[in-house]
Image 1: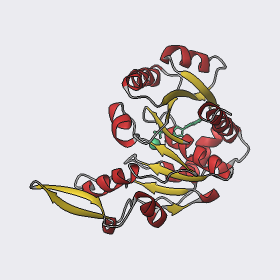
Image 2: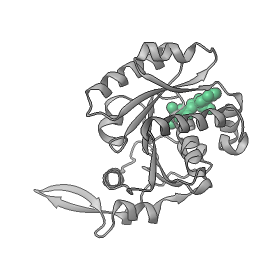
Image 3: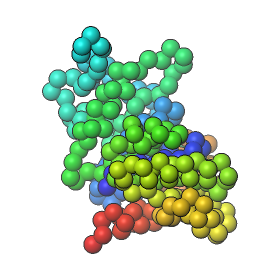
Image 4: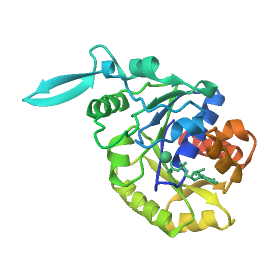
Length: 252
Ligand SMILES: Nc1ncnc2c1ncn2[C@@H]1O[C@H](COP(=O)(O)OP(=O)(O)O)[C@@H](O)[C@H]1O
Ligand SMILES: [Mg+2]
């Protein structure tokens, strides 16, 4: 499957995407986890030591087209080859590749951005799953960083601001030539939250993840919740999400 997590900043995209990628990998899938958010996130939930590094300079080459400077992967380097070569191997065998993290006002990663996008257009094929952690926001996740996704999981907190973001994403998704878009309720405290989120966003609810103090604690410690509390509420809920999405995407 090819899925990407979208939603408002702070909704829980990184926490859930990293956990989801590992759960999928632990079932024997080959998984590439892609973090295209310039703010730190997915590495922690995967349990991979955080670095700022994205693609190394050597992976991307500059060329000139009609007098304009453009970038592509180095000659002979395919998207799959770049993943094999540059992705970090994490727990459960997950391959992890990130765009690279923002490092101050003069941070220029134009070459990395284009290199990363070339990889998005040439991801490994059958036998691989892709799980993406997209930046917060509206248009860009769909049109740029999430273009490989066959399903968008909109992470929604039961708060007005998060619901409003999700409604906007749902509308945008409807105009797209349309991967599946479903809601994941997160930080749920009330059994009615999931239903409310589905009603207010118009999205099908894939599942709900409870508010989980152990997830907060694992974050504070810089650990993956799957290592900190492997059978706790978040791990259990994300396993159910994987099962539900499999049912949804790969009907038998
Ligand atoms: N189910 C949950 N229960 C409790 N805290 C959560 C839950 N999901 C996410 N959080 C917390 O919310 C904050 C934002 O989560 P994060 O995954 O970084 O969001 P995003 O990537 O969408 O910005 C983190 O402190 C995280 O620990
Ligand atoms: Mg994040």
